Image (cartoon, rainbow, N blue to C red; front, side, top):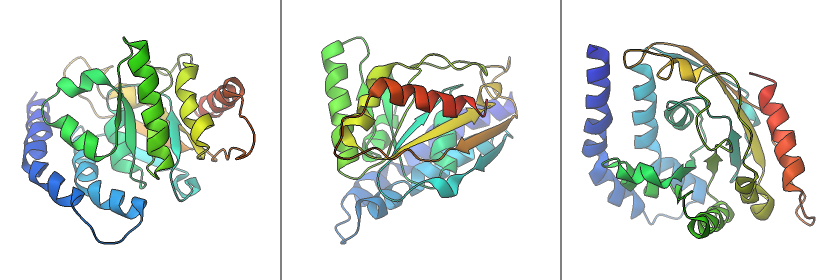
Length: 236
């Protein structure tokens, strides 16, 4: 119980403490690449996310991080639990944003940092807005920022992966950035399997070989989805 109370105190306390940093880092005008600036912006969120995971007592193993190519990529990951987001922010070296459900905007303070991280909010209840969000995500990738998408659309809360929703893979087929499949194994044990707040768990994050898309050919989104699913399932 005390661990849970301290976790929530840190969750909101650090967000409030770091808010003044947002405008300061966004105003940086020193010549640098998109990824270099994103790395600076992500320093606070990365520290915050990694600490949130460590406060649960969990052990995170990341395998294959060296496979992530330079430049913008689309990470495509399975989604076992709520801790997937802080795990990826905190333990992957590349700065990244998320395709996130719009409901997250209701959580105090978080939207400010998510916007700074180039996250894209999607309203799944409004088809027109959802399509526009995918277009926004494509433009974000083309501008040089990396994004994460969970194609299952919701948490599996276990070790069985749900079916992919194919629409989100337009982010890859239209932007033509490299696709990096990610397998997260065991994250649901931290919160979804716990009866009292959080519990320590061993979580393995596997970074698979990137998929480089042909730049001058149309890519079959369905076939790409099947290929990604098979890669992710290999480590579950």
